[in-house]
Image (cartoon, each protein chain N blue to C red):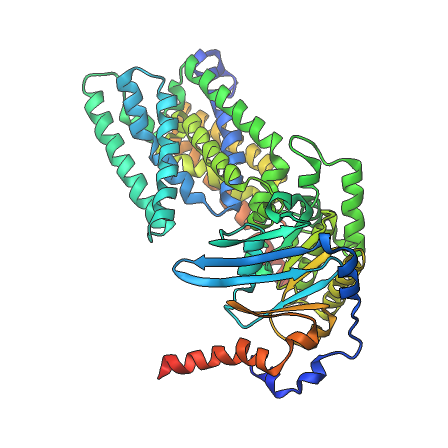
Length: 283
Length: 275
């Protein structure tokens, strides 16, 4: 009853759908970010969505499209600064994403004076407020992302594990890299409404990292990570409904809790598991 | 290893009496199957990492690429495969640019360039050798799986099939990479420092399979860290120190003059820096 009661409301059904979708695609795409050690790029791209979102809103275009364009643009700009100047990649990320973020906040603040648009919903998410069209857009994005990952799984695995070796067999690694950036941008756009641009990094990295502590192969990391992501976003949504908590932070707190459990109790590399094994020979 | 230590040994001892001249006779028959590197120059940032390097490698040869640290050995093989841009020069295999037939090459990077904590098993890594042959949007076929299993068997790693790669020793990791390159069924094999941090068993497996590949008419090029006794395994040596110092068989390459130019010059360079 406790679980089913809220589902009689249309808005809860919509949020549940978005929670499931976002939990899955964030974990899948986040697995790539984790193994390529590019977690912070996910953060940079998500912060950079804001100005595109605001400009699209002003122009009356679909804000998802505007946000996506800004996200891709930020990744291109980071790469451009990094390759054309002596500036290192992490510095380039910091410069670009803070600039985009500032511009976005400025634009949204100006816009929200006269319009019904709430900056906080983009910053921290508002999963209980998703509209039918937002559910549709999220589903379309998820279909594109998952199709790309399934169709190119073996190539992307080779590329992420050994970029040089895969390039030496003639695989178009520059396209793979660009493609992964696009997948990241699409995923953070789809997750914006659930957890907000500031906390989306958590849904990208944390389920994948928890799964990495539990299973040995990339596709298993993606599957277990998806399970963790879905469970977290649904429970966060319920917490948000029953206790009137902000949805994004509620989801993030659940997923972080699961990560710490995995860190402590993973059968292969958990901190407490190792501690127990260290005690065993003496016993 | 002290690069100068080699100079204290009599050069003749490095030249194995069992040197076979068969490499040259093969060359006459199959000259079209060779790799021809012409005037290859590579810049790394503002430094010339490789200056105007030219040499020819015949099919069926096991080639050792030697030189001091920073001589451009890895740079040479990466530039040959188009992994880094070259300023000038061409690399032809069977009279066509090598970069246009990369599906026929297998490259194994230095072990230190790989993240061994990556979530993949031995089997995942060996199957990567079948990615290109399988084609986009296709699963690995039964024959691809058989080829991968045979490759794993050949390097003696079948029992580790389902192990996570991070759990293996350095030598075992190198053998898994060797199996991956075998699974590629390539014609040109390039290994970057495969002997670093590996056990004797792995070294034996590597040289045994390199020899089998060469006997099957393949070209096997191996970047080497130091000039140990293993040098006698190679049919063809390339001695590099940004410039090509020498290319040929052991008697042609391992002369006192060449070694001084490759290794002694480097030491003098540091002396000048201090002065």
